[in-house]
Length: 167
Image 1 (spheres, rainbow, N blue to C red):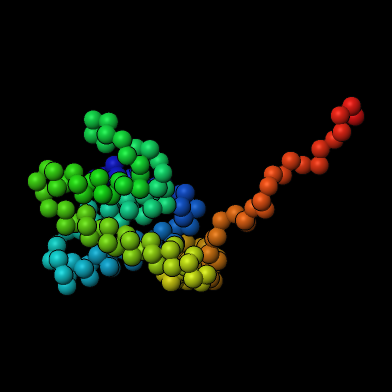
Image 2: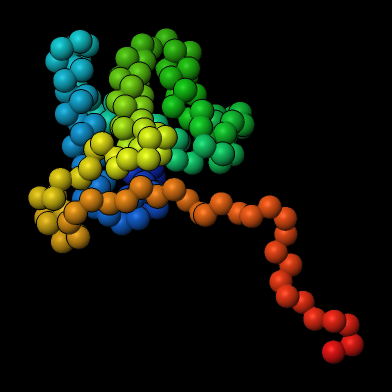
């Protein structure tokens, strides 16, 4: 579990959040509060460490869905299925994957509110990082814009201007 926490947490912080520590801390705070509410009102689970790790794994797998991975004895799968592979493994080992499922639920809520809904509706992310966290980490305050990726390409090929032969 600590290996998962270190590997995927550091990748999220440096690559997906681009070094924006306040946004990463806001994700952890939001996830932790939602996990505690789920635990208190529905599942009655006192220790939520594995659930928080699954939130990180789920969000990482959604942001990096096509990385080829292997699990125990070389079983290949793509990274988009990593949380589900771990849940099935827990079931095969005779356990109840309640903590893992809680983490996937919370991770999906965060992913939907932060990435899916803003891109489909063209609005800002619902879970904007509070300005006090940005000030705490000495980052610029104010709303962040939604990244829509590269501009759409024109059909056809861009071969360049070219030169006639012999010149």
